[in-house]
Image (cartoon, rainbow, N blue to C red; front, side, top):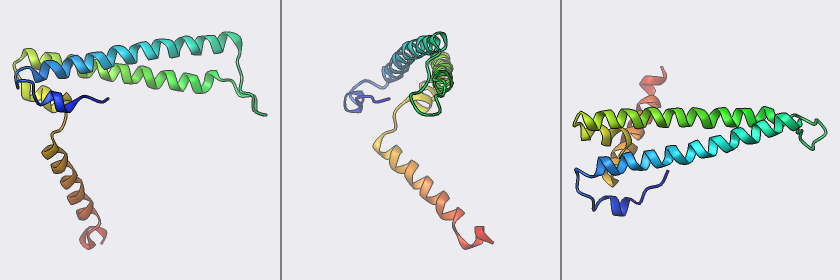
Length: 130
């Protein structure tokens, strides 16, 4: 999910949580449409008994069902994130909205990378391996 971070930084701090919520809502709608069409494709494959053209002649509905399940799970996770974000915004907790769905700043990405490197160093230290 890509946002135009260069424009995002120009929005006032009070507006940014709304922009984040609109972005997650848009992603949720797009993914719900993709999931809907994926489900229709799965139904068509089941109805017609479509199989792969390989020597195994495997039913296409099996991998398509896994695909649709993954898409549906993603939409559910997006809906949960969206609802939590809206709830936190109505509570007046813009920082929580930013932490949940806001983009990382350049400094935030550097800090996250440094933390990952620190954890890797601790895990690979001689003390941790004994």
